[in-house]
Length: 172
Image (cartoon, rainbow, N blue to C red):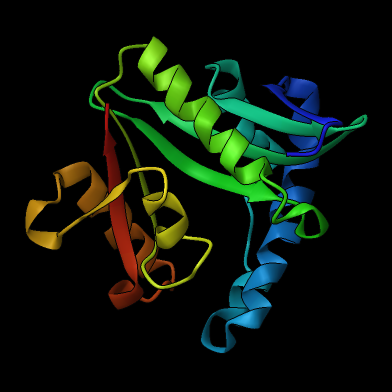
């Protein structure tokens, strides 16, 4: 990670920057022909981020004085669930995503969460393979809990290709 970058808890004042970051991050999908449409898909609004920020579930990556990435999670009894992680397109590949993910894992451990969960693409290199490097494992369909199964079903209902999606879990 850049010497001029750090991770901090998000504030409500940060919320209006997060949609732009998510949109920029999504530009990476233009390199995957059948998923290029995701670059133009809807992103979370500042209003959608606010409850997660207020609950202490959003961290931002700051480089110099600019927010260039974020991770948004929800704390549930059974896990901390990652809803979104995004790094500005021009800042990707410099360890900011890994630093954001590590912050969530460390926080989950400190809060005694039993696990960290997420849903992602199985075969996109910056998705499931990226998380697997940090110890996440794919939760096979026959082992999905109702919550993760519901998240995946909702994603499919909103146009994501179900055969390419998976849930992942890191047991703590």
